[in-house]
Image 1 (spheres, rainbow, N blue to C red):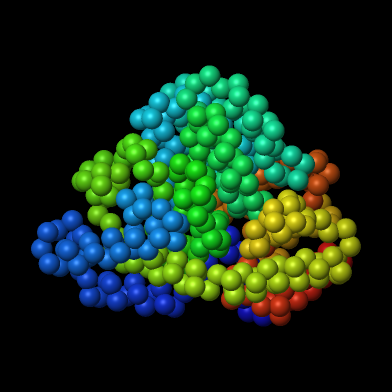
Image 2: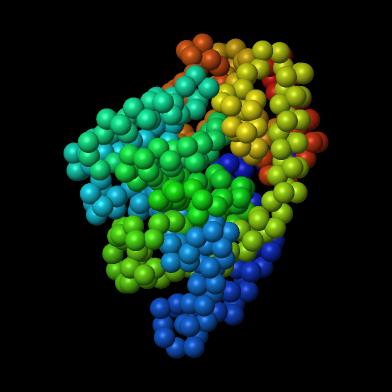
Length: 381
């Protein structure tokens, strides 16, 4: 095979309908959405319709959706403003969060001298909710809990309802990075008292460079970027109308095809797991992948029984064979420090073996799975 793309957790291929919509908007709607003339108003109407569409799928109000350049900016907007503007002096997070959360928390700890607590991680890679309860009960200052819904490296799913309930019981704010879940699951934020979420279009077959933050009504989050009064003062800068329209189309298509595509991808994941277990003795899977209710259907993190002298060449050899996958988050590619997620809970003996993240979309096939498994088997032999 010339190319097998198993790195959909890093980014997904744009849907043809999304590309067509973006080209249509770029060609036919040149106006600045902040302009008051007819051409500007047309651009503005596209943005507001997209805001309404996204809000409807999440069961929130359009005014609670703020467009950003992606998930990283959304996380930064929320966490920075929580400390700077909302009086948060204590952040409870975990060592397995995306660096868009970890690094901004580290910055705020130095800049504002806030308290930071890390929730313990269980041996399966899940957040210890009993420890979270202890941390919340012992917190004497205004607190923000920041825990991602789906871990982007191992696929573990957080119990959003349980964490939201705990946060509310202890008068804490709750932020969740939902970059890996928006567009892949039905999410009803009217029933889950999460205060803030972050999302990115390129994770659900939309364009790169656009995403959104959900800011619960009356949260009083203030802009991270200063300039004009766009996004009701929550995010300055001329909105990328074509990207926002593309994100709307991507979410519409994702939701329309959700049941069918989820069933297909889930079957593909289990087939991949079974084939690996059949053809590669001593293979191990990181995270909660054995329990479909506690792990996303879109990815599998595999620890392979590769000798140390060959481990460093594994990704390179897969790339030579046309197989695209990753050691972890694409945001830390090139790092020689290993995965901070796996380092947080794997034992020393397992950390010595290479772990690879394979992530899937509706465009992948069983033939591709067979090719990847055969390639891995040949490499390990």
